Length: 267
Image 1 (cartoon, rainbow, N blue to C red):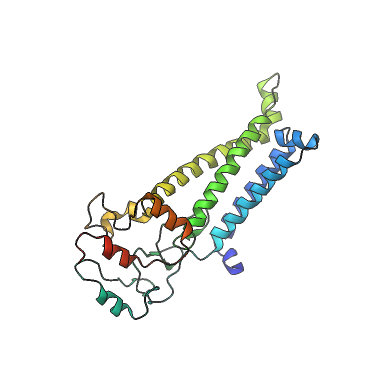
Image 2 (cartoon, rainbow, N blue to C red):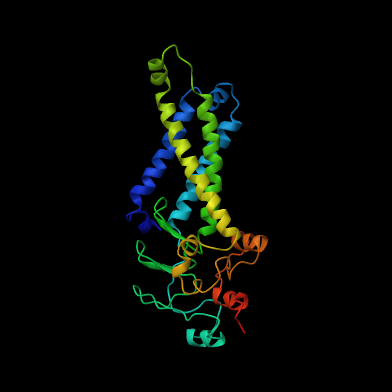
């Protein structure tokens, strides 16, 4: 984990952490509601806000540094035997054969994809996120969504706090001088809030239909989806089951079996 921290993503992670704590200190140092609560000796809300920021930073590093689901061997997890034995169980008319990656030469499970940035194949590949400088895949996707939820709560609270600290002045020049740092923090919070809302909305929608960003954007090029109908998703089990499996089932899925069960031409 420590080795991962000091690779190419170190600058990205350091910048994110620096911006987070700079904005937090600006909100505490200006005449915001947090500062007023501190001066009145009411420390509960300032402490809760501080802990929420800490939680968001910890989740950021957890998602950024954890294994997103690297494909390490040709073995299909969940099946005891060789890939040839596994494929022989599935009628060839109903399921595409497992393809071998042209870069790392490993046999890819269904829904896996090679990431050019990470130079590894990722199980249930969603996308490579430059914000966390890591892929989002089978092992860290749920934590990525949880991180977005916590980050959104933190940003919305920070937006309210920043607005509470803007002070009126007799002239525009003096107003900008007094509120300059707070306005800069407010602008960053608004930008990040918009980005997080869009990301969270997209991911919750895709999770609810058991689809990944890669599958949604490149459906016409993916062997196991391009022959399905435009509205057909062989992995969709309904909104409730999809959400339950995503957030509550912590195991590697054998997507080939689900695909075989749900495709109309399966035998």
